[in-house]
Length: 225
Image 1 (cartoon, one colour):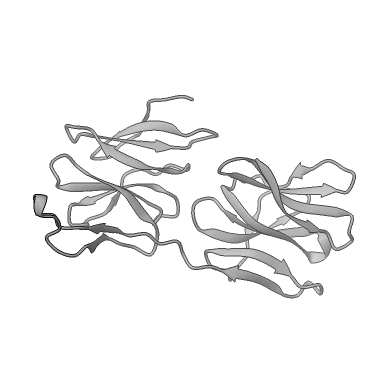
Image 2: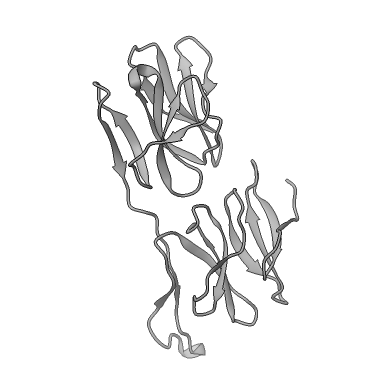
């Protein structure tokens, strides 16, 4: 899908960069000049926004996200499991290390927040009042769908760290996380009898269709692309 964010090692003999082998997949890569590019991390990331060298060329630091929130990670150039950089919160991107190696600079962006609003409606006469927020959090809430009886709302949220399906009462109260999947999960839609919710999720390279009982339980996969 593409290679981005190149950075020379302190000795000038290697490059670190980010490889996107496919959408929603990013790998930190280290390549000796004239050598073969090698994926360094044993973990999967959906996006990486910047990579830099640290500790005299023995480690790289990169901004990686597995869900929506990005964090800074440090990783040995010999490979392995990345470790989160302590003292840095969510939504950190574009890290750089000073030439002396004793300072780390980065960008702390604002969280991506989205709320679900409701607009009263009175038939052909149009709106019966102003739109007001119905479901809010400090994270992303969207892709909402009313149950057939109008008593519940299903929606997509990353308030638990990853995008999953949540359900609440029609007034937004009593939010409950319905799915706990690792891939990007969303677009909930109710069955006509209100007993099932269909949604899409990306368990691997492709997005697939699942269904789950409206009261919870194990999701059932319907497609296999």
